[in-house]
Image (cartoon, rainbow, N blue to C red; front, side, top):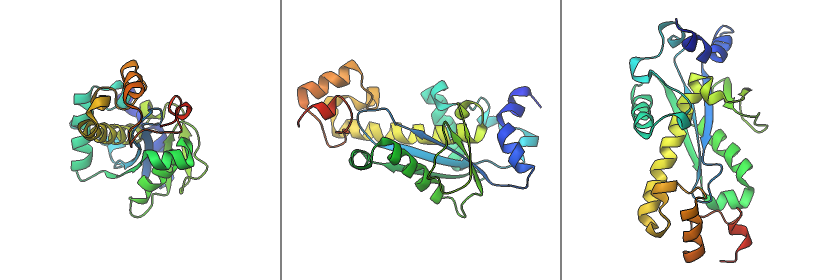
Length: 214
């Protein structure tokens, strides 16, 4: 077994040894953009993969931000289609983000993603800081999407889902070029906001949008 394989199942393995068979990795995509939803995903990988290794189709699985779009799409297709991985994906739209703030919206999306796993898993591995409102016991792991295969899988699910949504919004609101920047505050996006104002998927509570009256 390679060191990489061992390292990236380290947190899952500790729980599997305690007979916690279903360990969910949880991650989100889209906390920072000025437009679009925040998306969270949860993924449970088979515990036997700790001994057999990842399937060849998942070789190189890592934090989605470290992967190319082609790699993410390939992993997404396998994760959602292989039948051995349990997963849930949830999104919270811009209007709700403005209403309850991005942190609460992110945590709600995580809980909604977990709720799609039936039954709820007994434990979750969460990327980043602890989530006080999480509906299951958790282990928070800094840079967990690069240290846990379960979180990496959730990272891919969340990122690909959100990117696909932003492509649809780009067709709906072409003047903002969402397909290019996915709602992040690039110079081109900020120039479009200055020219056209905000559209329905913009987060009005985010600077610089909150300083403008639309």
